[in-house]
Length: 301
Length: 130
Image (cartoon, rainbow over all chains, first blue to last red):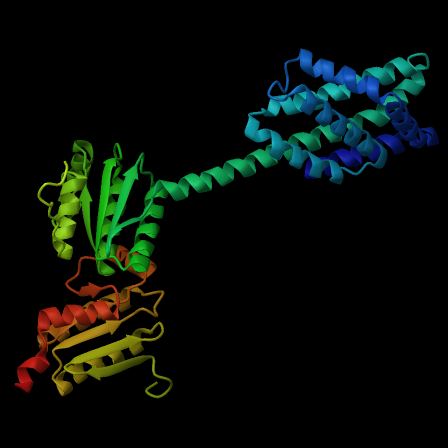
């Protein structure tokens, strides 16, 4: 936003600096020119996008529709000097094209192409009168830069929002707390356990114990490759905290590396209830809860 | 200091005492609670004590230590003690304060605490009614 303001002051500077009242009238004149040659310029722009192999993910019909709206928005910003509507449109456009894999360089590329196409057309129109051309470009360029900036920032903002949303989703999915029987929870841990994830695991586990009134929790870390000292200590604390909440924790699937880590750092493991695999842990949990699982005679398997 | 709204209620339920802490206690209030509870264990000849801390969202090191002391003193006075209703944040804080592996018994909530006492102390009424 600050960048926009900066460019905006630059733009006004450019107008006032020349002190020529003609400049104020130049922009409307320029806008009228761009409106007049709308079809031709838009087509030229579209063909240049095509040549540059930008936005290949879009169909020709979509391209036609989007280039028309971008063009109209662009001219409107030149006319009014307000980027608000453009911002809105750019965000909306980004929302539509991001899921289709459109990259930042493509979006910036097409806006810069439009800027070039329009500048070239202005150049052609005014090339006979050099001083006038200079003033036209002085009026046009700051506004055009501002537009390019706005579109790029909106696109990146939207992309970051999508990424943040996905990160949240992944984070939530990464430590599921699953009830498997009444008062028995299972926590499968897959992937690298870093400090942040370990902290979150503790939070979800302790909250899960409360909501499910769990008595036994089986934490399976078969899928965790290795853990460092601080995470190991954190796990031990989590087990202790669970015990304070009245639940006993069974840890299963300790890999040789993790077992070595735990022994080397010298945490008190005497109260840790561990089993080799998830099956053993579940059997122990069922024993603690008083379940007996028997197989019916003649059942398949 | 002695008057004012009750910060802790100590209720007699059969041969059990149920103490509920309603709000965070400062050091002197904690000491007073310790004295009251230990005294009442003897007066009511209680076999089991439940301390319910479900309303607490913070517990400092002094509070944690006092609770362990109470548990030890209650044991010496002949009562089994169980701490119930520890909130997740409090549980983790207590572990960080080095209280996680202490001798005190814990349960999820009041109901679980009563079930635990029934299991370990045994139904005392069944012995006296016969």
